[in-house]
Amino acid sequence: MTSRVLVPMNGSEMAEKALEFALETYPDAEITVLNVIGVPSWHMGDAAGLALSSDLSEAAEAQTEIVFEPARELAARHNTKIKTIVGVGNPSQAITKRAEDFDIVVIGNHGSDLSSRLLIGNVAATVTRRSPIPVTVVG
Image (cartoon, rainbow, N blue to C red; front, top):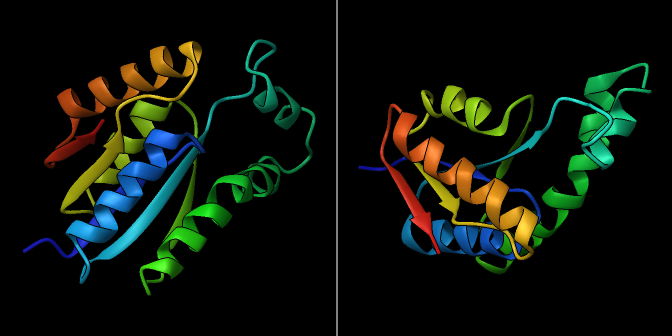
């Protein structure tokens, strides 16, 4: 029986579809949404601002609200509450490490633009290969 579901989300349409799938497929499970903030660097867009923050965790959590709020709204439409967690670092590594505490990972196939498709598609593929638990890729 699946009782704990991990849904990595990044704000993309495919990630929302993955959450929708999890909510519909596992209505009695505890669903946790994970948003991973990449390690700050000069070429990572919004994550670069994290490098200037005095409290990396606090800044990361503030940025993840952009992902978590729509996720909570989607869960509310299914009369469900979700848990949320923040990871920092390489997305596929953070997801795989967190997966150990769950029964299944439900992940979106890719983002909506080309760079997201390449990055998220690679993340989904890596998580599928390295996960210690089953992974469902929603596409």
